[in-house]
Image 1 (tube, rainbow, N blue to C red):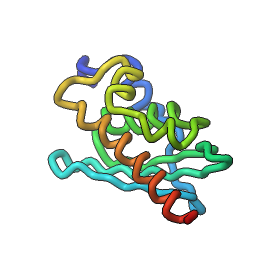
Image 2: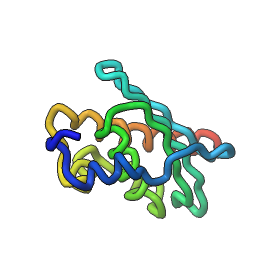
Image 3: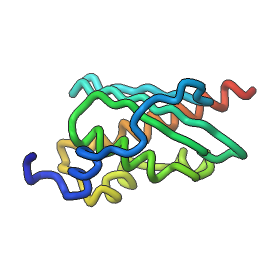
Image 4: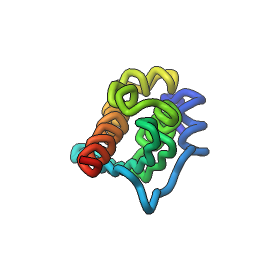
Length: 125
């Protein structure tokens, strides 16, 4: 793997956390980037306004998979409002940085988690 990625990116790519699907998810968010072809789906379980469990499925490059993995770790246990504030910079910083050409990958997770939370909020109304 090219030296353009940090060790943390490589770790989350080769050993992604929270991969999978939650069949009875409380909220689901799917996003894609037509430029690069990456597609990400995030599944959440919510209890007492906090993300109790989270899983993801990502079809994409190393940066997209690593962003998904670290993103799930960041928001697990957080309140929905805290998770809604997650930015692409938060994800990139937690990974030790991403190449400029791959920053769009960190947007995917922040967009997907927002969609999943909006889906959950729509379902409980």
